[in-house]
Length: 336
Image 1: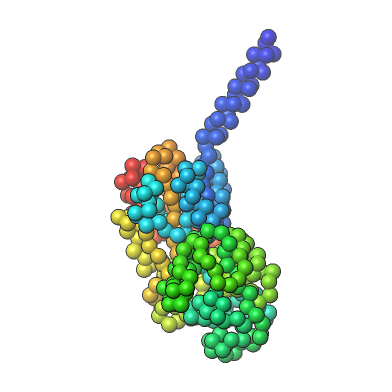
Image 2: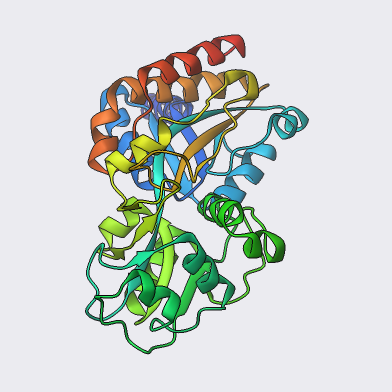
């Protein structure tokens, strides 16, 4: 009898411990754009707090669907939702970090930052109008490069993607032909090319395919040692993707809490501004009070402790003034 009681006591303790552990879990899903950083932040937060944060890198479209369906504690999207959409789905939204989307190429003999593209040539490549790397429009901005007379292999995202939303927002804003024929959004009908799932999939396709071009978040370009291009920005300067060029783009953003921080950072002014920058956003369901408290606690911790790691991975931390706006927004939303 004593043995049975002891066994029951042990079982009760295990169940109690398991329940406690389950309560100390935060589940999120969405954008692949910030996934590298979120996972590092989650690891460091678990060490500091004992609370685990699971993040599923499934694309912005999936993140929006899952938080709308209330199957995760927070969703993540690089495609900001407009206030009317948030109101319809009873959601709130705030930015977490800023980064850049970069074209990357795999052309024999072409090194990091050597190839220069303007918005017109990039648009024509993705429309399928420019078919070869030796095209006169590309050679015009690259007179000293020995570009091959090889067919361009276009790579794009196959899943619903905030990275695609940022990229196509840029193309629509700088290229009338793209706006009229394709448009912008997390998913579009691509005129040409092959699809890869997630930033990871696009990076792998470009890495393995000679004469390919794709677009990925900069951290994925660096991690996979892919050759990024220079781009001609709104000021007429050819700029390289970097912490400084992303930061200059971010400095122009009008992050208004009254509009749930809805803003785009593409083709911004500034001599050294990277033209395809973007914020990535967190989505919370208004009625999920307990989950929201845990999510806000996590992001408040990373706002205080995560900037160095963000910079290390080539993301731009939010300025203090914006973090203060977000904390006030949390409070006004009844979370903090």
